[in-house]
Length: 358
Ligand SMILES: *[C@@H]1O[C@H](CO)[C@@H](O)[C@H](O)[C@H]1NC(C)=O
Ligand SMILES: *[C@@H]1O[C@H](CO)[C@@H](O)[C@H](O)[C@H]1NC(C)=O
Ligand SMILES: *[C@@H]1O[C@H](CO)[C@@H](O)[C@H](O)[C@H]1NC(C)=O
Image (cartoon, rainbow, N blue to C red; front, side):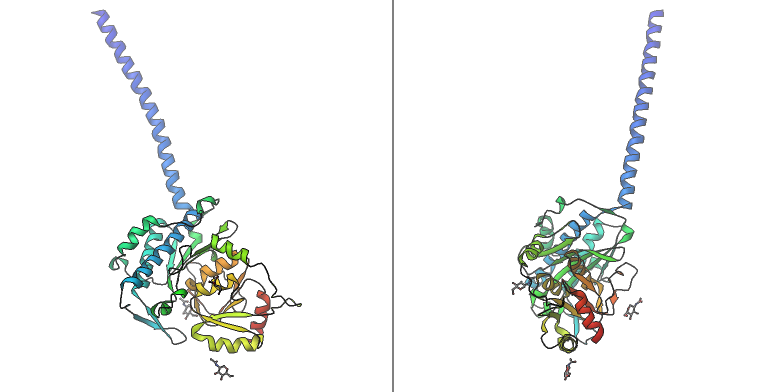
């Protein structure tokens, strides 16, 4: 009897002891787990990885491009709505492609980064009404990255300091006219109001037609190839000026810029008229044009990505009156009033000409 009682008491003590130890272990584990999870949660709220934002932005630009190409291939009648007249009085058509590209790009980035400000040219459209093409949904899984973005070191940024500008379809008018080489999709990451990372994607180019730059980190291979291909630069005159200025300007007001430029620079200036701010920025980077000049109002989603890439590649972009582009924050006006000057070299030489004569 006594032995039995004694062993049962001993078993009880063991059970209580083990329970207490298990409870303490569980308690320690639970506290650590909760603090780990909450720190992860807070980190996610407080900081955004620029590397993953860049990667997602590249993907967004390609998703938009897939939608645009899909509309081009499948719709016989591109459904044109008239959004209003631009300042130059030319119809600015909104197409199905515009909406579908916007919804693909905007929804993707918004889902990936719910805490950052995203501004798109097409902000009012309810995307629930715009079905994404099945092609795009399949392709989303299989988008190929031509560059190894993961290979670059990362930087974390407070999402309150980030504004993402989306242009879901640049050169809409030319898209409807089947002038597809001008068409681009663009994403731009502005930090504290300054365009920093730019992505320009040409949906109707070859497979590596996505251009991006991230200053002090790297840029896409196609931009590196362009930079390396510009070996001879004999365009400097003895006074630090430009021997052969080649301006690229908007098709819609080439005549006017032609006059302004001849006044400002002289008769030896060559003018290329083209469409799409993204297209024109790339032509300046490649050296096909020595300056991109725009003398009327321009929207920030048109110029943000090009400005970021040109600046990252060592060029300069300002207003045509020489003001820096530092007001690309979420609360800033979406319009720039004083024109644009974008160059890879001789920025002050051009500014001097235009500020004096424009
Ligand atoms: C350009 O200048 C010429 C000659 O001065 C003038 O006739 C023409 O209307 C001007 N064109 C534009 C678009 O300003
Ligand atoms: C620049 O010009 C060349 C030759 O005309 C052309 O092949 C190229 O596509 C142009 N643009 C860029 C961005 O290289
Ligand atoms: C933004 O700028 C445009 C062009 O200067 C102007 O018409 C508009 O009123 C401004 N909008 C706001 C909200 O300030």
